[in-house]
Each structure stands twice: as structure tokens, then as C-alpha cells.
Length: 149
Image (cartoon, rainbow, N blue to C red):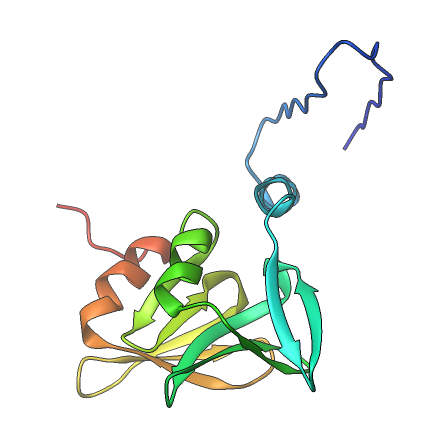
């Protein structure tokens, strides 16, 4: 991939132009980075506050009226509501996986259909989470598994 960096006059707005033949993983990764560039997710761990990169988040869930942000190494608590975080992250790679969870689709390694209509997803950290029946069609669509009519 060829990269061109140009210094503009101060009165011109910065811009990023991406030209590609095939939307391969390197292009998708760059687009994800740009999508998340100015998005900040805040979490608390042992009374310290952290700014989290959305790409580092595996999933966000709700338990006992508290919101937890799961990454590979830590679980942070958020003061925001699940639906607020979902709204912030919906145009990224996150989707509602159940009433209590939003999931980063980019962190899914494999999925398996369960007998009751749910899906089980294995994440990068080997953790398994469940996608509710209601949200399976959304997952299939995002993964490109939906049947075409």
C-alpha cells in the first residue's frame, strides 16, 4: 500500500482520501480506525478513569443495573446506560446481541447455532457469549450469512 502524506496550508481543512481496487482487510482496518478516530468511551477500573479505544472493546453488558465494558485484559465499569453506548457505537462494528449486551462483531472468531435458536459466539479471548434469537438475523446480516431472496 502506497501512503502519501502532504502538509497543507493552515487555512485548508485536513482530509483523508482512500483509493483502492479491492476492499480488503487492510482497507477495512483503515476505515475502522478512521471511524473510531474521534470516538471516546470512558471506563472506570479500581477508581481510576480510562479512555478506551472502541477497537479494544469485546462487548459491553449490563448486570444488576451496572454497565461493564469487557476488553481482553480488564473489565471496566461505565456510568453511561447501555442504550447510550449502543447509540454511540452503532455505526461502528457493534450491534445489539441481547437485551443486556452489545457486541463488537470484529472480535468474533466463530459462531455456532444452538438448539434453541440462539447463537453462541466465541471471541478473540476464547470467551463465549450468546446472541439472543431476536438478534440472530442482525448478526447473520452483518456477517453476510443472511439468505438472499
